[in-house]
Image (tube, rainbow, N blue to C red; front, side, top):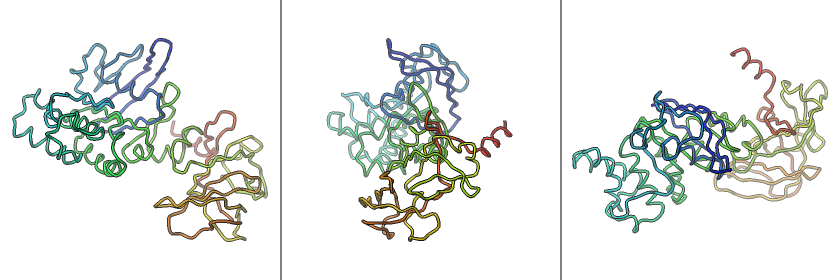
Amino acid sequence: MTIELKNIRKAFKTNTVIEDLSLSVAKGETLVLFGPSGAGKTVLLRLIAGVIEPDAGEIRVNGQNMAGVEPEDRGIGMAFQNFALFPHMDAFANIAAPLTARGQSKGAMTETVEKVARLLKIDHVLHHKPKELSNGQKQRTALARALSAQPSVLLLDDPLRNVDAKLRFEMRLELPRLLKDQNATVIYVTQDYKEAMALGHRIAVMNGHGIQQVGTPADIYHAPANVDIARLFGDPVINLLDIVPERRDGRVVAMISDRAIPLADDYAPQIGQPCILGLRPEALRFVADGTPGAIPVEVEAETPLNEKTVTLVLTLRGREIMVSRPAGTPGPASGQAHVAVDAGAAILFDRATGRRIAPVHKMMRQEDVA
């Protein structure tokens, strides 16, 4: 089923949570709602589910207007953060509740419940009541209940939030397969950018009463719509440096540690304009002195982080830059060093508005398509 939201508005007294929000989700798509706490992600799910009604706008599921349609008649599966488990029923009965309501046979019901419980690693607690379960087990029981009904639309509100790190990592690998098998249209809420990148066909970044950007994980990471979104994705966080692009020897450049760092010629309109240069830590690498374009820096600290090593360096003017390299690869731990920049990975933002500046040739392509 498809989901379409048009000009949705929702306020609670004087607090406007969502303003003029529009969004479409294709049949079978997993769309991740990502953003900081208070951005309105859970409110948006509750609006789609019919738990609360919008103040304005239209919600359509498979083309049908949901105005006045009760939650139980929308054909939507939900797993919210508050679990909402029946306290007098064990985990098996909670998971089986939608199947019981449907009148499914005991054999088929048992097979379905045990299968989804195994996938979510709660098959060993099926006969425990909610008070005997950890928060992580409760959350996975609520998720299993939503999945067991095999709904056409599935709303998942941060279902791995209370799960320990190891299981959360495993679930990032398992859930995409599970959701694909369900063939459902899924809206998945999370505040974990790695989870968003791993699970979403597309990501909708919510902040400031609405959606700031919708795109594939690659789009969001490599072409964030603004500085705020750039900061939300990546660990360590993106390097952001105030610059004013110049033209030297016929090239568009940014000056860092008195060295000219080449930028794409498509940024020529920004020459002389105050900008912010965004550089992902992995777009920087340590090189030998004398390497063309090498930037002199002072190494301040080095932090091994399992699969990578992160180094904090200072430019000649004391600006901090993070450099990330795969664990085990050589790099200086202290003293003077030099780094090179992958100019093709540079992202430019307008310093006044924080918005990403699209290179001229990309803007022309978009206009040609339009």
